[in-house]
Length: 306
Image 1: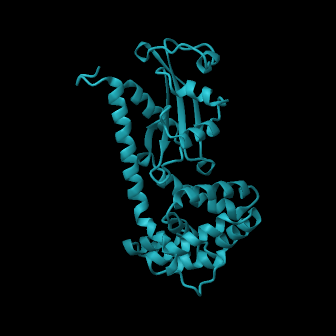
Image 2 (image 1 turned 90 degrees about the vertical axis):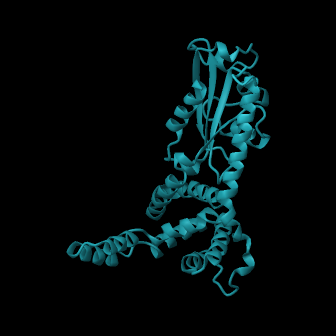
Image 3 (image 1 turned 30 degrees about the horizontal axis):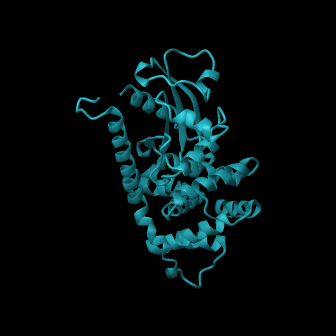
């Protein structure tokens, strides 16, 4: 029993419900401004509808609504491309919207002679390739964040031997690192009551100790001496970013087999003296190089202490 007289299990369930409500609110807050992207009827019928033309339309659009419409259309086209077509587009973006090095040099020289805030702002603007702004505008569309994560996964696959892909990946990775700042992430317990579509992804993404069946998954989530936690982002509420599995035990186990055993007698959680973090899995290949693991383990350790 808790101090208030409410059973501890009921208190935990209420806490999870509040967390899911908060997650839904954050998701709505993030996605609401971008839903205007569905107004495709606003698209200029005379626009060049090739991917290259749409990229130019996104960057040259003077209105936010038209920019979102073109950006959503460009993402649709990108997702329909094969790898050769995507590589050609990447080469085009890197060549067409790269730095204006001559203008940047002039701005830097002028700033060196007369440093002021305006000159510094000009350097900052010129020091960023225009394709970085293209990614920002793509992100503003409905579902843009998860679509860019998937796009980066494809760019990473072509990066070796492709200098243009490597340059675009560097810029996109920096943006994703800001957008997936740990302060934006939501820690969510994963248990046997979690929606099936997310449980299926836990099975698919497990990278350390494969989950062989639903019975195997249940053995890792349902008993009171087992825990699982995942990070989610408000823009990707049904896509776990990373998750960790924890076994509550009396002592440090000497082998992994007893931890993974399906048919066993669960130990009352309050008798546990050790928390074994026996598996941690990254879920999104498009977020490679953006670290969540240490932050997740620290958050979960604090959660278990409480």
